[in-house]
Image (tube, rainbow, N blue to C red; front, side, top):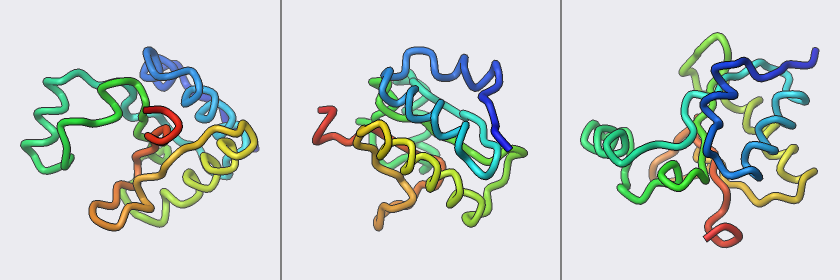
Length: 124
């Protein structure tokens, strides 16, 4: 089955770097599971809220510059195993498009299953 981004997900990609948008759009079309865009670009006030709540460890988030997105399975689930198929689709899409991304689920110090960002080395 081929999935497509919904209207709300497309709206949440507004202002996100075109390379990340391309990866998300290809990923949804090849994904084995449906997913939604939770958040794309983020303003400083939202980042401050997340930081104070302990849901982010930085005030230098890639969301502030449009270099990151948060994705979740649809319907929404917060179970870790539900993020792996999304990560597989995002990594496959990024590889096909030759776009360097990082999955927050691969981080050792603060794993973040919904988070995907363009790598800092390629997209400073």
